[in-house]
Length: 594
Image (tube, rainbow, N blue to C red; front, side, top):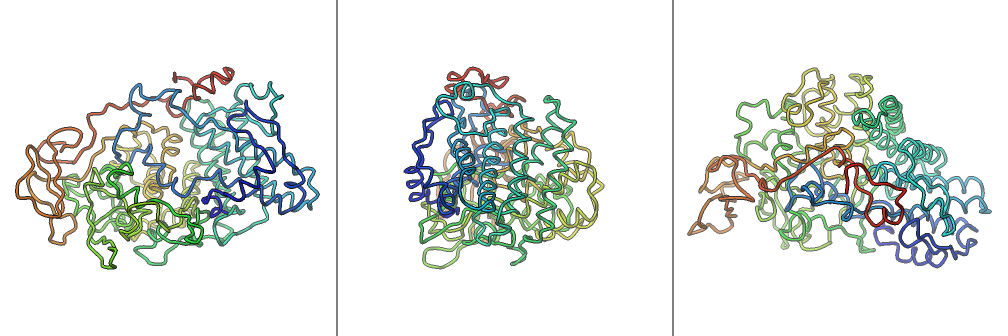
């Protein structure tokens, strides 16, 4: 279970280590196993014990919400990622070419054949192992493209295999799909109410994620010449998502109306109606995350802040684009956040947001400029109590997969195939928007291109349906670790070069009330620090880089405009790490990297 996983499986991994000496670094350093195979494969308990260790492959309880801040197009952080700074990232800095998990999985798969347990039990554990092998390889393909395919455990004597070159993307992806198909057909668990283990729905959900990625990747990344098979993957994505939907196991959480979305990310126990897989927190096992510390600290986290370009994509509550409003780009923060998609007020601090103090009292909580660069300060994943702000003490569980993503996968796959219907739209995008308080455009496919969305995000897309689905995906899944994968498959990595723009400041040297409570919150100035400062007000000097107003004495609050950034198509894949390439030159470096 993921509770055990996030507690680092201390007991389980110690016992597994006693049974099986796994490789310590790379495939080319695979040791000779000293395992007592009977302890592992002689009983169902041994199989369960070993299979539990596979959960360490999944993201840890504090990993998901840190993924997008590390490299995404919709937020600003304290420094520009080295990946997009010219000359700053090479194969020497690259990482991720680790294979220990795969060897452990393949060792387990090979050993299952001789296990005396019943065939049905054997198939169930084979299903679990193949799911995690698919999960492992999907991450490798996303990061490096072609990689070596191994479906057997290697020893130090298997030099030809250890030092072979990479296999084709086509082979790897076909093998991933085959593993997922086997897993879905043979997993014993149709449903797990704790949402902490793999079940049939999770496998189909993951398959929809994998196949949507690959289908759109092959369609838009045309240099690979795989367009002819793109629709095959899109069809598999739609079918896998449909399997989840038709099972009726999951549904969108609507309890709480205007806070239904937010509750998914602050609940101690996963909201089982929508959450399909989660890292489950536990006070008794001391399993906590550090989301509050990460997003509210001026020093611990990167001070991730959403940018105005992205915030502009949230619709008005009547379903019309916010950017259709005259003068939308000069509307101040307190006004731009009104009558918008409910998810806006559940994702960032907006007027009306309050926090709970250590004494139990509540206080208004506008954006704090010691924690945000743009004014669009996240609250998604953050608990409202200030007592959680100073360490890894958060008690909320962290979703790894939820039903909303499956609806988005289904809608996008169908739209890319050209087969989406009004009914499809209603039960996917329409349902998500209805949960967000939006009243218009819920039942009919859109027919008008949003020029703002097209101009600022997807200039090559002329289909209004695809544009709106991409809008919805960005908003619904913000800070859930999927954004760079989306930019990669859409071939829109250049969006990482977006200006890190913030709220509109109409003039300098004037206190601003950001939440309408009559109390000033921030004061922007140039030159010397103002005398006679107001207690509780953040004073922000915007005289020069790295933080300034784009019009000088007024305008959007921009951050780090002075740091050069770059993007090229070869950057959709990471370089093979330098040391690993030296050990095995047959791997060959990904084109464009040094």
